Length: 452
Ligand code: TYD
Ligand code: MG
Image 1 (cartoon, rainbow, N blue to C red):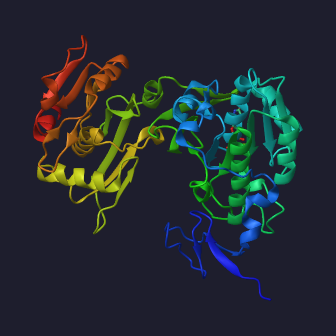
Image 2: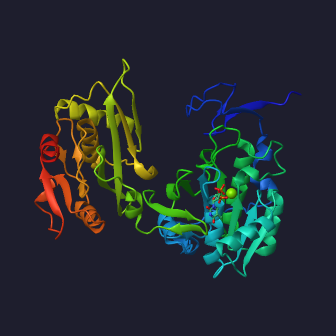
Image 3: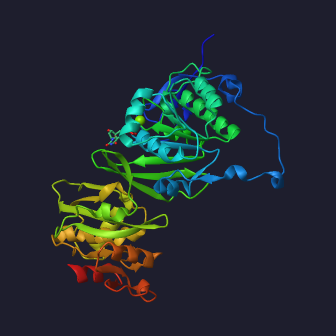
């Protein structure tokens, strides 16, 4: 009998009956791989003996004690998880190789071990290597158990033997289960192992952290494939050549997803950065045209961000435009507003926009700073160094109000700025902050007149 094969996208996990160069679901190229179709029986985790039969319960009878949170000992991590990790949940920590996922996990062990038993399973490193790393990071702990293992069944046995409160699996792409004959890192293996770990988490009330690599080439299945299975997806991001890292939740069954945690990678491991604004602004050029600072809300926390623009005359028939950290279409709209309502002839220019530090500004509050950065670069005149700009820009060039302005202004003031441009609509109800001069403006013409 011919074995049936299916085609999976390693990036998004969708299945297709035939091979294609580009995945129609997620748009990635060369991520579709051929894999034997799993028989329904084999793919059920029930076979591995992990599953306990569930019985229907009345809502009133369900105890909420399982939903207990505990602190990971790292406040940035707790913040992203929505106030600590939830007992019996499965958290997936995704990120590019070498970004610091293993380091982060090993570091939280240090605090966790003071109260709980932790089993750290690595399919990538030997226990000796982990020991060396933990010595460098200053991680000790009586109740930290290490295991270098790739077979899911053996990991399960170890869990039953050690009975840890927390299980860390580094990384899901190296783990394989005997109930599937495809390769480790393939879509089916990764899914099945995660489902089995999920059963383990729910069944034993064990909190599981699973590390997942993201790779662009599509040779291994990425965390996206697992998003719908797990309780919480954290993504660990950063530029490899820069030292700071941002942890953000992209899915959280137990909390909000708009918080970020900021870390810095030092020689002795990851350090928490409780005030990211200073770090994101460090190295800001003085008196250079084309940069402007704004304040955005990351969850409930105001964070300062520097928007940089480079506008040059174009030598192409169609000008070149790129945008990094701000939605491309939004950036192009702001350029059009600047041309039409601000009277600056930027239409035929090449334009490059960048937000420093790998931040993604999804908020319209960054509009005014973006426009000012464009205009400043176009005119070749710098925005004053001690000025920040906050405000949404509409299509007629009007400035619109933003929420949480007083919070943003305190952050602007705290980081040493003395002036802040805000929408004039907002200014009426604001409490004065001594040492911070507010510049209320109605539209971008006024903003440009004040500045340039
Ligand atoms: P690692 O946690 O192994 O990355 P991942 O598990 O995401 O693949 O981190 C790897 C990088 O971190 C490595 O290139 C060196 C750097 N690093 C430090 O700068 N300081 C440290 O203390 C440690 C342990 C790693
Ligand atoms: Mg690692």
